[in-house]
Length: 159
Image 1: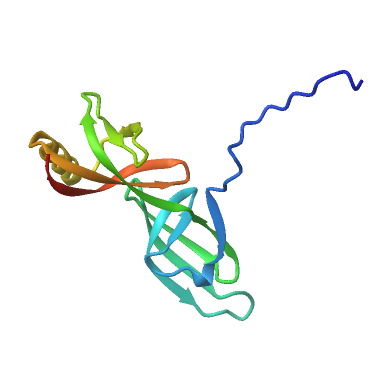
Image 2: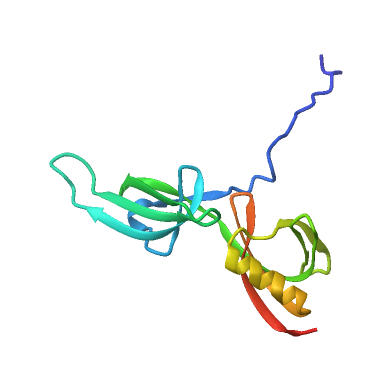
């Protein structure tokens, strides 16, 4: 029995959670919250008074940080909500491929080639026009819950 080797199939990552719990009553406007499994930025919070029985409720109106869809949720203010770990990283733009992917330079000198161009039209034209003019562009990449997307652009001058 002890001669057999046990093999465990691990489908998990290093254990770093994509979200952390926070009491609903402490989440404010411009904070982040997970609604229907999507990371969102809170645009409006209203709190109702407690009824005859029960809790005060928080009504969240939030916008998905990747798709810009409006989502709503009502949670008792004493309960915990999931809050996504949202990171913003700046990378220098090296190249834009024909199939819509960008090549970015990371801080340690490696390239990151797994990001698509943003779907936001004004940002997309700014990136393409700036790149065509030969400007040095730095893009801001927002990442949360395993998703990444270009969300901003800075011009650091001509090459």
